[in-house]
Amino acid sequence: MARKNLKIKLKPILFIACEGTSSEYQYFESWAQTDEALNFFGRVDVYPDENEDKPKTTPYQLYEKAKRVIEDGSADFAWIVFDKDNHPRLLETFNDAAATGVKIAFSSRSFEEWVLMHFQKINTTFNATECKDATGKPTNCGSPVVPNCAPVNCLTGYIRRHNFIPDYSKKKTFDLFAAINYRTEIAFVNASWLRFQVNASLNTAQPALHPINPYTDVDQLILKLHNKSDIIEWGASGTDIRLNNWILNASIINGNISVKLSHTKPHSVALNALFPLPNFFTTDDDLNDTPCTFISSAFVVSHHGSLNNLLCSDDIIEYTLQSNNQPYFLFKDNGNALRIYFSL
Image (cartoon, rainbow, N blue to C red):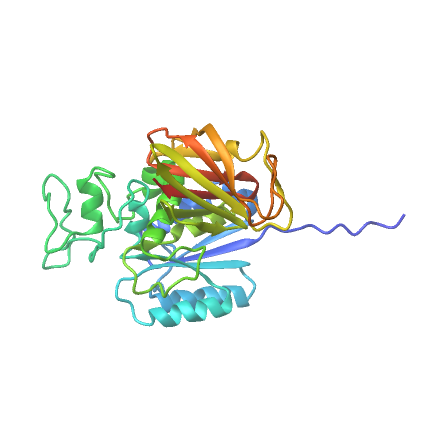
């Protein structure tokens, strides 16, 4: 009997190059060891580890390192992680990475913007990562010993002062992953909110990122580590959001939530017990999702034959829903891992 030639499908290899050699390295190394990452990737290599003698840490050096590992076949995917930090060749790094398939997780002013997103929706511009004395030593601002920042507010001081992480440190001994991992889902939502606030949503035409402050898209790398393709978008009350063939608009009218729903799908969408009411929620900053209570519905545009149980492309149905006294409306399309939030 002829022996069958069985092909073994190998798991892909992910390479992550970090600008930070302490807290950032430890954070991604911890992610690399999670079951979620190892279920999909055969290996996650995080650079630079403690054995690296003279690590490359500028954004363009990280890009060149990542490009090499893709070209020599030692990794299937490559990401670089860096901050604004007045680095040279930032625009060149973005352009060359886009041309060669190297992905970027960028934060401004620094990686701590991603840390902050685990705890608060805030779009304040910070112009320093950490306050230091004349010798360049961190002052540990935001602590009881040095409560205030000087000469400008810094990100680490803000994080400590507001007791988000009172003992926050950029030292290698500090376990950042343990300090924030339990709030990762909140950080996903808040990072998307921040990008919406600074007109840099991932779901629309993006501006040049290197001048923006504040900003972070580190969440996209964490999603990659989980092999997830979640799409999260934010919109203002009363503004149309168009995403994945959906068009939504949510606002408060006469104390109730008004949701206008349309789509551009090639086929009509059934309106029944399974859709859309189970997809409508209100929520808050801690992601306490509450199903919406139906009051009434009516077609406001029905030029293409929409009926009570059928919504045709480009027609619009308006739902009136009970307000749950929560600050946000949420539409979930679980089949496409899509969430659209509106500030009410």
